[in-house]
Each structure stands twice: as structure tokens, then as C-alpha cells.
Length: 199
Image (cartoon, rainbow, N blue to C red):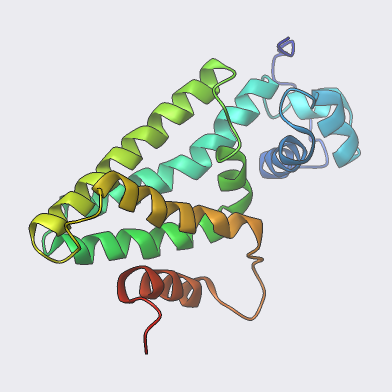
């Protein structure tokens, strides 16, 4: 069932749109999108349901905004890597490092993105964007193989999935504000992926 929509209301509820989105994403991750209602989001913020509708028209809009937050910078990162000059392996390495930084900066939104399964038009659109990103990254891997910079005995699609599977796994354990900065984390992931563990 879809949540009923309501027109934006005048007045100043106690939270801005960013706070409403953050609360919604946290609940979507914890309870699941389908099991979360606008009432749940309002309760988590300590405001009325109408205060939430002051900022958004529907629960689906919150989902779309969160997924766009995760995908917009990933799209830009991959586009920059595919369109830049220079060796493909260096552009791929930059894409890996930048993807780590995007994940850290938008960890909740990326976590939500990784959990969607195509249960709505919004989720289907997000998955379509993810597949486009995957294809572009696999293309970079192929270019790097053709240039002789990466092993030719491994399937580029598999390599791409393994690389970005490692990046995506960070949502399970990395916490911002800890002893490792996003830049250090990005260098570590890229170093492991491209240079291995040998000293």
C-alpha cells in the first residue's frame, strides 16, 4: 500500500527537510521501507504527521530522495572516470577511491541503496542506475586489461563486481569519526585491490 499524499503545509515544524530524510532513512534501514509509515517517522522526530508532510509529499518521495543522494555522486564519480584522459587503470583506481569517499559521506543512503530489491517503481529506477554504473566500471576494467595493466585471465565483469563488492561491504563495519579517515580508508581499499598485500 502506498502512503496517502498531502500538500505541503505552512508553518515551521521543529525539523528541517534534512532531518526528516535522515529519520526516514534510519527507519527504512532498521524496519524496512514497507514496514515504515509516515507516522513512524513523525514519532521518531517527536512531531506530528502533518509536520512531516510540511517537507515531503509522500513516503515514496523520501525513498526517492535518499536513493538519489546515494546515486548522484556515484554517477558523477563514474562519469568523471570514464570521460577523463589517462591510463584506464589509474582512472579505475581513482573511481574506487572516490567511491569509498562517497560511501562514507553518504553511508546511510548508500546502505539503503544496497538493500533495495525492485519492489516499487522508485526502486526499479535506482537499480537501473546501479546497473549503468556497474557496466561503466566493467568497461574501465576491460580498458585496463586491454592496456596490459590488469590480468587478462579474469573476467572484467567479475573483477568489477569484486572491486565494488569490497567497497560496498564498508557499510557493514565502517563508522565515521573513528581512527581511520575516509581518505585513509580509500587509499587502503585501492592499495589492497591494485597492489595486493605483499610488502
